[in-house]
Image (tube, rainbow, N blue to C red; front, top):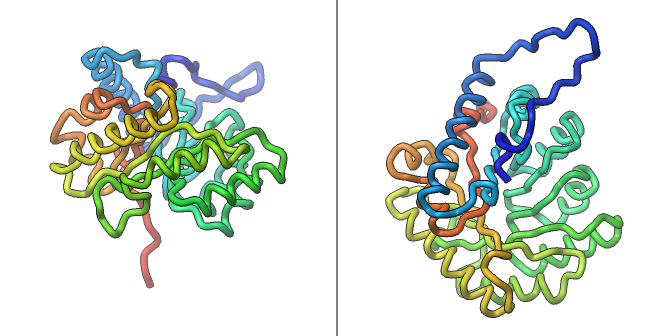
Length: 274
């Protein structure tokens, strides 16, 4: 899963004279940060006794332009995450088809069909938090004839009302529903967003690992087949990474998807309110 180790840098220049692409300062910073992230993930995996190629870094490109995503792609990154349907359906057609898109934001029923039809290379929806959205995804996947879609059940491990996700006590029931009642979906694991108070984040991630044990026991599947996706609200991500061994904490607890946004791409840029 470690993209930079397994992918060569791609170019689409014609034969003959090859113009060197001009890389923006933001892109250079992003590429350097990406390489640093992979180095730390590899070290953390070694320390935790896990294979680094079983850990996927998902670069969360929320609010970032296609040009910057493309330059991070050219550095070898292949897994990208988006929070908003409108953003991903606008960006995906402008970028290479071998990008593996993860949708990680709250998904409304009326956005399911545009998402699935607009992003053929969507490989995973990480934010299934109730049966209604699972059923809608299942129905649309079947109707448009695409292969089964991987999904994660989002768990609200912090108890914050501002966060989406099923309560920990409900994750087994929802996982069972996806696995047993949604033939066009592939239950692939659990996802959570760590609490903004990063001193509490280890407990959030430990709770997700506990939920995985309960889900796997209930479904009769090995824990190795149940992915864990862990990440932070973007504004607090950098503070966590600087304040503790963020990657080792996640990897030791079994994370397979490490979601990183502002550390790679810089602070998110929101339109100014008029």
